[in-house]
Image (cartoon, rainbow, N blue to C red; front, top):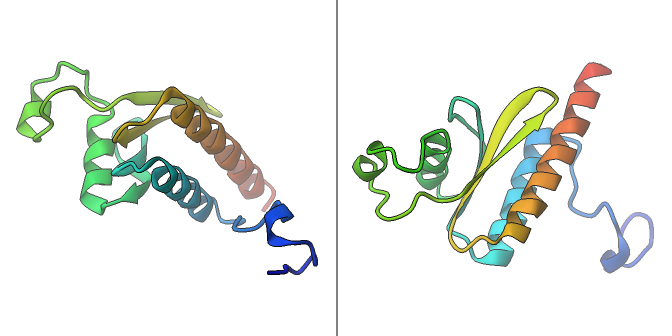
Length: 132
């Protein structure tokens, strides 16, 4: 398959990218979830509201909501999370706090990929907004 640049698809660096911040975030989350066989991946703001997710909508909303709760919070049992709380990675991007969480066997390298991608996408998105 060829692209507009007439380079083979395998070498087309920008294939599947978007200039839309939300679409870019969702594509990053989708790719990671599918490649790693995760049930869901969520990015939340500091209040636990879902910013972007991949997987079943309810799972993404729940991951976002519990991302701000301490690991020993009794509300986790009430919400149906038996056992350990899914790991959460906190990021500060241009002064805004976001959290990334995944349901499944996510490894540190997965969180690193997600963190780096979120930082790149959200920083680029803020730059595009500022120049408008």
